[in-house]
Amino acid sequence: MKRYLVQTMGCQMNVHDSRRIEEVLAADGWRPTDEPALADLVVFNTCSVREKAEHKLMSALGTVRGLKEARRGVVIAVAGCVAQQEGERLLQKARFVDVVIGPDHVAELPALVARARGGAAPVARTVFDVHAPAFLDATPSPERLEVSAFVTVMKGCDERCTYCVVPYTRGPERYRPADAIVGEIRAMVEGGVREVTLLGQTVNSWIEPRPGATPADAPPRWSARLARTSEFAALLRRVAREVPDLARLRYTSPHPRHLTDALIEAHAELDVLARHVHLPVQSGSNRVLRRMLRRYTRELYLERVARLREAVPGLTLSTDIIVGFPGETDADLDETLSLVREAGFVAAFAFKYSPRPNTPSRALADDVPEDVKSARLDAVFDAVGATQRAHLASLVGTTQEVLVEGPSRTDPSRWTGRTRRNEIVHVEGADLAGAILDVVIERANDHSLMGRIARTARPAAPPAPHRLRVLA
Ligand code: SAH
Ligand code: SF4
Ligand code: F3S
Image (cartoon, rainbow, N blue to C red):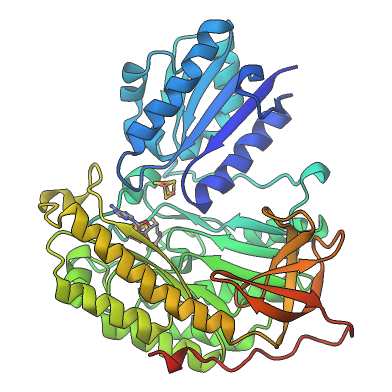
């Protein structure tokens, strides 16, 4: 039997791509293994968004080099963003790699692996499918039932933030037709999926693909203004209408300049939409935002957040933040910290800036010293941590509606799920995956809540009043 192992690094999009890689391999007769020594094929699905990506890949590759020497016929493949970025160069740098495939070539993997097993020369496939974009449908299998699944609505990115490698590793924006999106969600829900997260680098810039449609209406140069499209809001409405059995709908990551009034209205209207939005801000300083080419200001961001909160009382927000962008001063960092408090983020991914290949910000000196970057990162985590702890503590004693996703990773007697506002809740019980339960919150940890199943099966109580303002 042919056995494969996929190692995934990177974002949710890569996690999603790894599932598709597993599915195309399964359809070709491959079976999974966790044991590198048993694998006939090892696939590294790589990420290039921050520094040392290539370095990490080379050391991971080093660990499987021996496999190839020990057993003839083992195939090594590199997929994902480093594969796209490096292409043929990777084949020169690591001569034992057989297949390099960019994100648009997943469907070709089984054929390329078969050729490699037959003794063909190493090959790299990294051309973007700009003219005929393909989106692989998920093929849910009964062995791997998911409670919560991702559905791709677009790929690529046209924003071109100056620090970001993604436009170069994922290519220009291409959109998936609404019919295909709705069809995939319907099939998933029929197969037992309860929650869907629509996926795209700037997911809310989605438009129905049609001849002559303009992607993203990106202003050619810096200008902070809201996009005009409202098609993503229409897509959400259509999903809600046509897949009434879907319990929850999320999307990630929206770009703030595409957080249109129409999208805010959809949040107010649609019960199925989560009451949580992950809205990457990157910085609270207009000077830095401008140099990042984020195309919004601090004021625009906060105005959008205020409107969203008005439309959806109790909504929670999380974000991405970069510290130490070239030229960032202590005063800029203070602006970021004050924005963290003003926006009341209850979670954040924060990163130290690192220069990436091909990106415009490479031309700027990476002039914030490493120790200053570290201190700024700590300050951001402290600010978000304080908001998060206060928020979670405010929920003790309330009853929350929890969608259980699976057994807890740390404690096998517990199950883990999330509320509509994305708080993580651990609860005791048996076989709860996929259940939607009323849970009485008994304790707050730093990042999650503990609770017990409410005795009565009454509908979940409305969320506790949003208390983040207390901190602001
Ligand atoms: N498309 C998403 C984010 C994609 S990358 C969006 O625009 O929101 C995920 C996160 O990595 C970014 O939000 C950013 O915070 C971080 N990131 C991207 N490039 C980076 C770099 N060069 N250095 C440090 N962090 C970076
Ligand atoms: Fe990168 Fe900006 Fe595109 Fe996000 S919006 S993927 S940060 S270029
Ligand atoms: Fe990484 Fe590519 Fe995602 S660079 S963050 S895997 S889009």
